Length: 445
View 1 (spheres, rainbow, N blue to C red):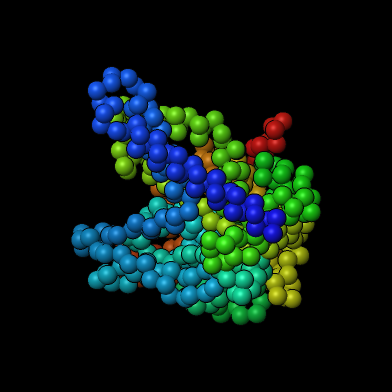
View 2: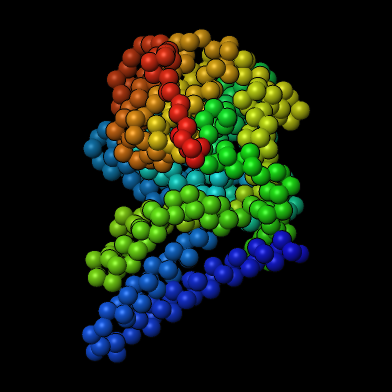
């Protein structure tokens, strides 16, 4: 009951802050204060609006918000997210574009289960839709999953990915972002061994911890410092009575959000101070840059306790992926079995979550893969978010990823917007494009 009480206490605190914000907004906006020329009341109302919205977003799943896409005919075509495979802990969602001829390029985007919803990749998916058919793994909030649905750890996650790849077929291009990178690699190796015909055509790994020890960050330092007993005692709670998953052990999204914010506390504090000032001056808006970002960033979901703990223990502490010792459902995964799936890694030079070196380690693990099917890209000046959703992704990385897919797909069908081309070998990693690692005194690259 202790862990359930702390879960409900966090929810009570969130609810109380939302109420305080609403009260301050209503009180400071009372018409009578219009006769009092004092900025305090405007500041009170502005603080209330920002506070109420911020705490309300923490329990609301964002909408995909991808309504139309411009096709080759120059017309806007409606986009409808459709659940193609429904599973207890996550669905395979397809973004169906109405009245548009099918694109030949089929992309499965593996979204992270690291505290945020899959909608965090909204801009990534929107950028791929004009030229491709796109699917995404839409993970469910653990607080809404009954205990009767059973457990869900990194092995189950890997099997989900393997099932989704199997469902989509061998002409699939898989893009994994951040946390699922090592598990998408494991799922591909798993299929390569037991069902080779179900392997995807290409695998693009973006900023993920294949080998966390390759470059230190605050995340890897934390994984080394804390013991599994300490982690379970301090981070794991039971879902309270308000949700359908009552009694399920989880790593609460609110705790994960607190850790996210603490990593860049000064930046977030400045952002909220500036937003409150803008609201007080009357220059704020409903869909300004601050609200667009934080409506997504503050919306968090709970992870199952077994998934969170097994990630820390097996990926970060024991380095089972990096050592090629990962086991899925009693089956030893061997990355050397991957022999025909073209693999590209993408890293950001300023990534402080998964530093350069952690992701490119995947290429060394795939000993059976020819060098002409391996590629890597290090984006100068890019942080973690930028390599999959920011300017770096739009201007530099996305074109390279699509080119890599087409280069390893044989002839591209005329249905795609890209010109047809023959298969060309992917660029082989060399000393010139392999990132050099340097660590500071704080352990951050």
